[in-house]
Length: 340
Image (cartoon, rainbow, N blue to C red; front, side):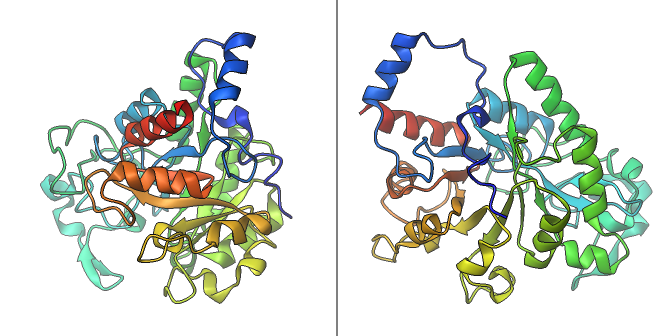
């Protein structure tokens, strides 16, 4: 069932903490705004990738708070499961490069080999142990001055933070959680699906019109989730030849049978020469919204000479959401286009 028209790009999903516009201001904005080529005609959403992860340690509360302050429409937590069945907000299942665990002598003997490498692994620690760790910037060429200040979060702690922020700003904050490694976790006896449903239920988010979209690279997991929940779903996808990111060989038509959106790698949108591939139009024709990953100020763009060029090209192509490590840049580029 495709629920995209119910939720995904509805205007109320935007984080709206500013004072309400007057009718005349709304009319002026409508006249001056460009014709957005998104699925619903609304401006492309800016999705804070792991929070404002270019400026603060990824998945820390500080990264999420800054993302909201910079105007992001959606914030993204990645989810991995602890040994006691608690969803933890981390991108990778190993801990060495995004936390302070290497400096924690009490955990020195907990390194084990998993997935072909030796490290400290989330599924071998309890949630109580993991939340004593602090986050660190995972990219060496980014600001390291905020390392060690913010604890690792559980998904429920993240949802509590979002609820508190909604109360503070009297707005709706959209979230786009990604469930990481569900097949591998399930093989360990740690199926993330029941825990995910329980957390969504506890926060009144397990419904078709909740400001939530669940994403994963695992098509089987999304199909299982689709069978038991009406929450909108996004299939992460890097193309038919991308092993581990090809939706298990499913076509876009098949993806549209269980998902509401497709999280597309940005190289799918343009040819190497910078021309449109038609991917967005093809997905839209099937009722699939398109969220592209990932735009980074400090990495080479796939089109144009700058990150601003890249963002403007993506917006002009009609993508429905852009994952950005520096959400303020993505918001500013969108605002500039709307004002032209």
